[in-house]
Image (cartoon, rainbow, N blue to C red; front, side, top):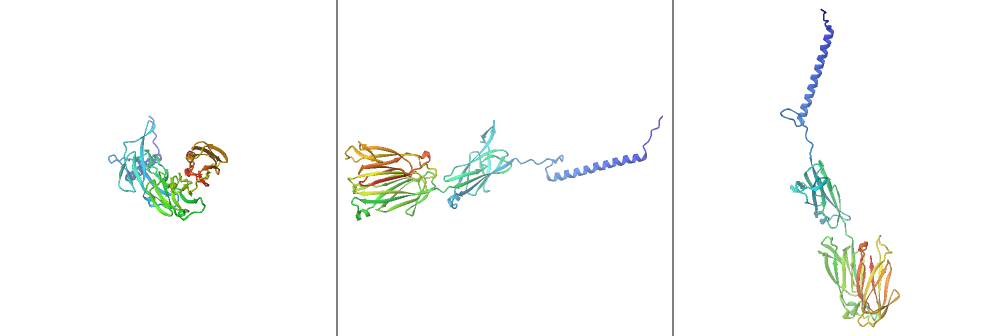
Length: 417
């Protein structure tokens, strides 16, 4: 029988030392792990039954904030700017079959400037003034939304984040409205009286002639509107209005602060029974910019017997105005009933025979060109009209002018686009 060799005492001691060291290391690791778990348990949710660590869930809801700011292109904000309410329509969407579809079932809570809680669904309306904000809460992460502002007359709108996906936290749909100060022009109505003898009598210089002014303001005009009549303020509360004034020889009336796009008709009463012939008795047109539009009215006392003439002049303004463009004019004439026919008139020096008391002429004029119709019998009634070129972005200050030819006088119609 072979004897088993026992390990040396030194080897046994070394083996036991290594085992003790490993046990110590394991014990220390357990203590550290337990300490960290205890610390985490004091800061996070744990399972009370098993003591198992449960991580906190990531937030799944966010907020949509809608803000409103108002500015002006010139000057300072007025009370109207500061107190005006601007309307917003809010919609929420789901994705169905790859398409966004309005969510008609959702409902969320919002507050304006931290005020009373209100409810909003898709298609709901929120109204905000300058400096206010509405905060919609509880939006699920990824929820599609749109915020659409209802257009406000006189304002241009810019926006950021007006549509998109809700995010965790807060997303701001910022709207800025800039008030565009409307361009305004004026009408200057002037009165001149002439006599066939060359010298006016006191009665003629003191005679008052009545004028009626009909105005149609642009549909987007902010009312009430204050205009001035010879420097005196007058408030207009509707887009259509009528003014009247009386003028003597050499007097005038200036109507200012009329928004561009205002349509007007200025007509003088008929004074033919008093022996006066109005070379122009009515203008019809539109305020086209920041200019003073002269509307001269000339009455000739007497003026019978001799022939007169009519001059039409074209002017084109504006940076983009084409000064080589042709503009078509139509001239309708009604000769006096006792005219002996046929008669010969001249159009820009070229003779033309008229065989009826009513006739129509037409011509095309470029910038700075004129049409002169001469040898018209005194008492001939005329209407001058330009074609509509608004489709080419041209506005016309005088679209129609009517009047009567006076003997030895020239009726002048000036048209600006």
